[in-house]
Amino acid sequence: MALAKYGDGITNMVGTFGGNYHTRDKSGAHIAAQPRIIRRPHSTLRSMQTNAFRKCIVAWKHNLPSANIPLWAQFARTLPTVSRLGEKITLTAWQAFLHINLIRARNNLTLTTIPPTE
Image (cartoon, rainbow, N blue to C red; front, side, top):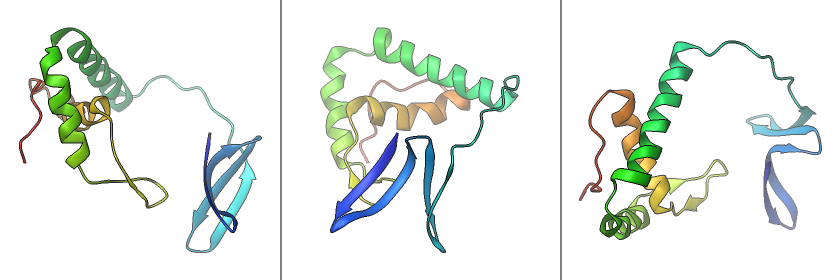
């Protein structure tokens, strides 16, 4: 999936589109063939990330009281986030929950069902 920023034409495009890989760096915009995927066994780091993500999914679906979802939505609106294109974006409640709890899950801390107040 490519992210395109429109202005007078396309001013920025990042990602894959039509088998091409669009990037931008200090030298300017580049288009290359999409890199081939090489299948390798899961690394320890990838396994840790996958397990942390699974813990967050279970916590969101089964352990999070429904009364806390609006609190996460409010927290998400106040969390300053910048996209890969450099634009300010607003996260959803689920994305804010992941933002806080993925780090906690990777460090084997208990997941929080209440968003931070600051």
